[in-house]
Length: 456
Ligand SMILES: [Zn+2]
Image (cartoon, rainbow, N blue to C red; front, side, top):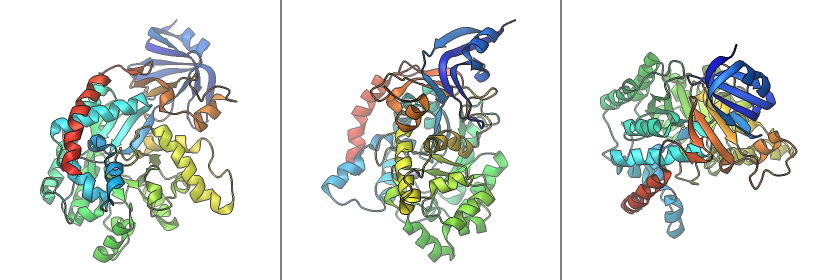
């Protein structure tokens, strides 16, 4: 006898990204209460389940949703600012202090919610189903935008209680910074089983703007609540010099010494790390994120080496501040080229990056980094139904030897047709289901010039 399901997606080429590398050429997925309850050949799944609704894939490729493991939601309306300013004068450095933080300081709560709607819409439309916010102003408004658009995410408050030239509106006392982080987590439901789509995390901007007391306290409060702490790590030589001058240790050593380099800590960028640092990531369980759009202008990030050694490392856009796309497929392609250059070209190895590795980092790596690997990151029975269907009739798809070759080599956000998060349809036929993207764009077009003018 058939069992009831909410939805069946059928006649799909399923690339599951499970540990066995399961591929189902004519496959189907049954979904109930946001969870994948059946997956297998279309004939078997449709025989076993009676759905309230069906979606016919007609040969589209089904994959798990992608995870943006490092995004600055609040910076979304500064798209192109650095390029525009840089064209007319030399950019002041470091750009995070000179432009990014002052921009965030100028935002109203309404601006942040609009930024969230714009960012999460663009992410869903290009196949990203989860995000891990780096920490910014007004995280409660990011959460509101995430709920509304239908994406999964962890939001957090940017925290700085030390350092030079931080705008007054962004600087907090240590106690205030701790309390505001706690408030974000307690205002949102806990991420116990992946079913709470929008949750709160904690954030330390980076070690040069956070006192040791804040670093220790935030880590302890996060551990007590079972949530993660997002930070930037070894994103530039200035950070290493600061750490050596202030603490007599390199940044990782300092964090280990403080007892906070644990699986609670998520370390975006992690560019200037050596072999011993990678061993420490493995040993202590801290997670990482490779942001391929910007990281190669700073160093030779060993992202692939970290991935292959078992570090929980995902891919991130780092928001739109430099290279404005939020399309993680494009980030994965940049990572493939960049990692070839870093890891393989020096030894004249022409195929140093396996085709599936960058996208696997964006899918499985991101889920691990967010602490959600038991619930997302693959298409398997029992996991949350975060699913992307890709068209195979786009301009680059014709003539491919296999769907896998197309997916790993060429697919991008423009090929995304349907997106489900938690079993709910967020994108259908390339259009958002929950929000009016045209209205969001109109609002952004009115507000963005004012914000740009205030900061440039
Ligand atoms: Zn960042």
